[in-house]
Image 1: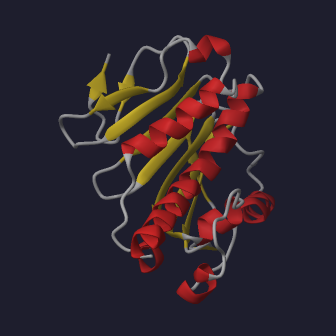
Image 2: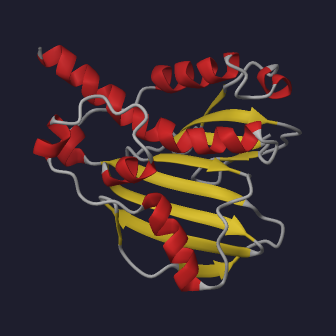
Length: 215
């Protein structure tokens, strides 16, 4: 019974990552995204980034926050509530965010970076806007599942790899991308980051979270 419970915890914790990865894969399938990265960071966080279009945010801070809230805003989920949820496949982004102790999203669009931080689904500040490269587009998410629910459960490279390979076989990734033996694995010797290059077209350089450069 305990083993089954731990397996369910691990499956559901990975499903949080899969919910966000699915959004990036859909951008790739629609032809708007050529690069997706998944990185297991040394502090137990996971970083997911892509070079898709980014959410339709603008310099209208209130309108942009409303867009983010509609997509991501949730509420804290207690252990009692979680125990009644069972397997959540698919969970939806609001539920996935609610099961994160912390989540930071940065959207790059129209020369602006839009950043919002959440704790257990609740926004922690007004939307922060800053300058970005004029041609930069895409989304970056850094999340940590709620330790009050998932405890010391860890992400595994095998589960991430298997899910990504399944999506590739189902042609959610284009044949051009799938032909590159995805996912490629890079281990940073500086910070220990485990990174998977999921979708790569004309890819030249990779920078892990500590900015160590691989070519």
